[in-house]
Length: 193
Image (tube, rainbow, N blue to C red):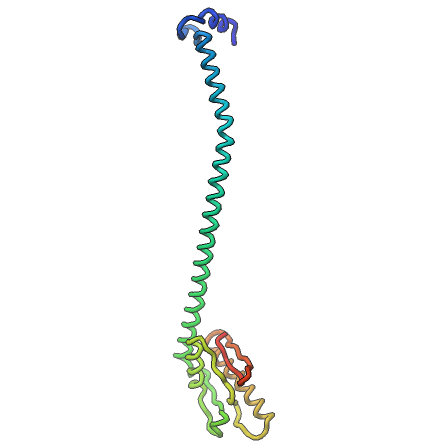
């Protein structure tokens, strides 16, 4: 502080506060000045304590926000999984319906053990298989061959294998994806996937 301000403060200890028009300094009694300084120090101390409290509150709010966001992310992931499953189901249904409508494409003739020499058009079997797929099931394809059955076991096995390959190819052509053929206890079965 400039020396004249200190002098003015001493001289004005008992005088009320006033502003000098010539000077930019404000003079006031020392008691009032001391109270003002004490109040500023206390306010500054509160400001220094306040950031700690603020940080604790901010940390608490951030933790709450993190928990809420984690919960929302879980909900979104769950909804996304549902949407994916619905999409897969709708895609499967759409593929099967199209295949049922067009099951005569690329059809071939095959024979059954019970049918003897009579050949059968594959489109009827394809329809049955597709209806099974639509219900979420598979279908047994045992006792079917691309060649007539005879007493030669080697020819029978080869004809049945050729039949499974042709059937699988025809279904893959209609569905746009290859079905699964599995050997089970009761013979071969075919499934959508």
